[in-house]
Every structure is written in structure tokens, then in C-alpha cells.
Image 1 (cartoon, rainbow, N blue to C red):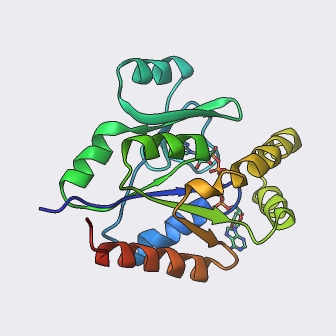
Image 2: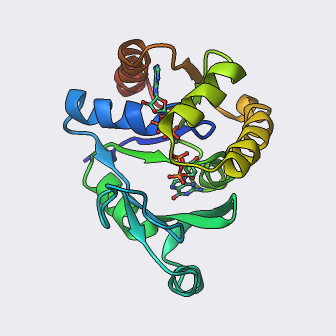
Length: 190
Ligand SMILES: Nc1nc2c(ncn2[C@@H]2O[C@H](COP(=O)(O)OP(=O)(O)O)[C@@H](O)[C@H]2O)c(=O)[nH]1
Ligand SMILES: Nc1ncnc2c1ncn2[C@@H]1O[C@H](COP(=O)(O)OP(=O)(O)O)[C@@H](O)[C@H]1O
């Protein structure tokens, strides 16, 4: 059986990765989502095992030690990482899986999975990006400033990606990503 496709969706904080992924879940029910582990505190409404596997820093370090993570990164003071077994198992079963991760982690995945499909989600502008983070109301001003400076560095690494998708409207952004996945399935693999 052919292996599934590994799709990596990255982009700055607040660009709409979570929103786009939620919408894709409805539109592409066969696409599997990788649930990451993190040492950050849950936000209101977030559930363990659904949004993230919430871990203490010690538990997270133990996962690194035991080689349970495909990649991990420290981002604005917290650890985030992709559980390895679930990804490998899903691909072996011939199913497509999407990882929503930041740029350092995406570059590490690229070293291991050259055949992965790397998609960068862009905001229409940096002002719009700041507005979206502020509008979400989940971060303090200091965290927002920090995330904005990380965002500028992240956008500078876009050349490592296969596709750039602007998230101007959710519907359009999802259509672009759906089209990419469909096209990748039609590709002649050499
Ligand atoms: N490297 C890596 N980054 C992750 C992982 N899970 C989530 N992230 C990224 O970590 C960053 C911060 O995530 P989060 O605190 O949930 O904030 P938000 O995505 O900006 O709402 C985002 O860019 C996520 O895409 C992971 O498993 N590995
Ligand atoms: N295309 C869009 N147009 C307007 N607002 C959006 C769009 N996509 C996402 N948002 C809003 O931007 C904020 C950040 O989105 P979110 O999905 O949490 O981003 P991320 O997961 O990349 O940090 C949310 O309040 C969300 O409703």
C-alpha cells in the first residue's frame, strides 16, 4: 500500500493555522491531525488530547530523552513537540497526516522527511497579523510583542517551504490547501 502524505503547516502565531486546521477537519474528514505535546498552560476551553497533550517541563524533557518526539522546539518560553509513533503509524496505514508546527520544528521534519509537503501560511500583512493576535485576546502585550518579532524571523525562512498560502479569507485559504493536497496525490513520484 502507498504511504500517506505528510503535510506540514507552519506560519506565525495568530496567522490562523488553528482556524484553518479546524475548517479543514470538516472539509477533509480523512485527513488525520497530529496532536502535539506542549509544556505551555492550557488556554480556556482547550482539552488534553484534543488540542494538545499538556505536559510539565519535566514530563516533556522525559519524552525527549526517550526519543518519543519526531521533532520539538522551544517557542516563546515553552516546549512543543510532535509524538513520533502516531505520525509514523498513520503514514504506514496509507493515511495523510497534517502537522501544525512552528518553523524550527518544520525544518527539523524536513531533514527526516524530504518527501513531506511544506506549506507556509502568510497573513495579508503584519498589521493584520498583530490585529488577529490582539483580537484573539489570549496573550499578554509582552507575549504579543515577542510573537511579532518571532513572526518577522519566521517569514524570513519561507524559502524552505514548497507552498505559500495567504490566509486572507478562511474559505479561500482552505481551498488553496485542499488543492495542494489533491495535486500532490496526482504527482508522478520518481
Ligand atoms: N515545533 C513544533 N511547534 C509546534 C508544535 N505544536 C504547536 N506548535 C507551534 O507552536 C506555536 C505556538 O503554539 P500555541 O501556543 O498553541 O499558540 P498559537 O498556535 O499561536 O495559537 C505555533 O506556531 C504552533 O504551530 C509541535 O509539535 N512542534
Ligand atoms: N482569514 C481570517 N480572517 C480574519 N480573521 C482570522 C482569519 N483566520 C483566523 N482569524 C482569526 O485570527 C485569530 C488567530 O487565529 P488562530 O487560528 O488562533 O491562529 P494561529 O493558530 O495561527 O495562532 C483568531 O481570532 C481567528 O479567529
